[in-house]
Structures are given as C-alpha cells and as structure tokens.
Length: 299
Image (cartoon, rainbow, N blue to C red; front, side):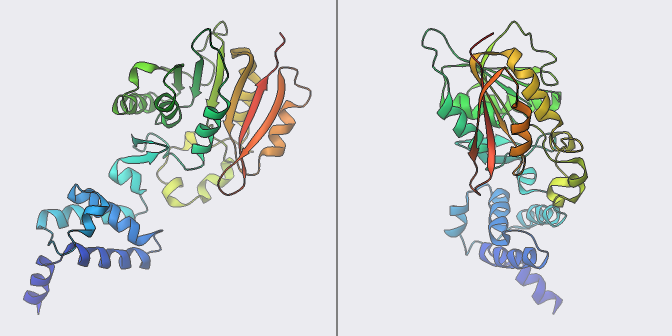
C-alpha cells in the first residue's frame, strides 16, 4: 500500500495538485482556494496561470513538489500570497513587496485614478507631485508610469520601505522621474518648496481594531502603515493641518481615508481658511474613500 501511495505521489500532475490544494485550502478557510492554489503553483513552476491549463497532465518533479509544499505551508499560516510570491499587481504595474511595506489594495487605485483626473494645469512648468508615506511606491510609480511629465517626489519614515520603492521604480522604468527621501510627513520638507499636488495613503485604522484584523494583515503587514492611533485620524489630521504650507495656491491634497471617516474629515476643514474646497470619491464598494482638498488661492 505504501508503495502504491508513493508511486501515486510521484505521478501527481498539475491538475491533481491543484484539485488537492484547493480542497485543502478550503478546509482551512483560506479565501479563494482555487485561485490561490493556481497562483502559488504557477509561481513554483515559473509560468503564468494560463500555462497551468495547457499542462494539466504534466507531472511535478520532487523538487517542484517540495517548493510548492513550502508555499502551501506558509499560506496555511495565513501569510499573504503577495509576500509568498514577493510581488503584487497594482494599477498597470507590478510591484515587489515584502513585510516591510503594506500590500497595495484595489481601493488605493481610486486614489491614483483621482489624482490623474484632477491633476492641475501648469503649462509654463512641470508639475511637482509629492507622495507621502510611499511604502512600496505604488501610488507615485503608477502616476509616473501613467503621466511622465511632472516632477515626482516620494517620502517615507521607513528606509527599508524606501529601498523597496526605489527598486520598484527601477523595475517599472521610472526611477529617473522620482526623487525618494526619508521623512516623517513634512519634517524633512522645506516650506519654501511648493507642490501642486500631495497624495497619501496614511495609516487610518484605530489602534484597538488592528489586532482584530484578519491575520494576513495583523500578523504580517507593518503596523506603522496601518495604525492611525486611538481614532485612526492622527496622521490624517497632521496632513490636513500642515499640507497648506507646502502647496501652491489652488494645489490639491488627496488622501485615502477609512470607509466611515468622512464626517471627521469634514470637521477638520470647517473654519479652516487655507482650504477652499473638499470633495470625496467613492471606492468600488460605494464608500467615500478618497478626500480631495483644494488649497485656497489666497495667501
């Protein structure tokens, strides 16, 4: 019997492995079990998912099975797929990701889309765009990839994140368009330098909620990129309060916010003379996800 089992294991094809792994993931409550199995097996074999479908009858070698088994173990421990494969597709680009950076979310694509739609006009000079808390560089690299004309700047408090972001800029052929620097928000930014647009996906989850997030997030992603202090608004307030001093008249501040934070954000700009307008953009689920602040033209 053991010999028969061993022979079967040695003959397991791509289709066999996919079916077994999808069932195994499902029994452990892993989201999208079949898709996850396909992504990890394609990564193991160095092919795309379409390649799996044209090689269903191909047996796996012992080395391939061992590599795939390690990936499956990591996913069962709830490590995110993007950290296992080391990359994540976002917007129109692919990014390298590690536990030093937040995994880019689909809702952040709304921030990129909004930035491209609301980009100010400045025909006499290149626009200056700043991405604060850049992490993997998802936002600024997407903007530089889609709109090469402006001068781009990107900051982060984490030097490890900045190394990854710069590597991603090189990977996507936009490193010559972006200047990266270390800073906690505006600490290292000269107020004599005025930007036309500042974009950011700051931490906005209340501290008490972070431990209760799915383990893929709470156990693996960097806490400083998630935790927005007691009410989730600490960093949003810093940006809203200080950004006018670093924006040109009529310049824009775009922030990703929590799904229920619109009223609090509106309260921040009441009687604030530096902001002329505030509007919101919804995400794919219908939540007010991106706040767009317009600096007043005076002062």
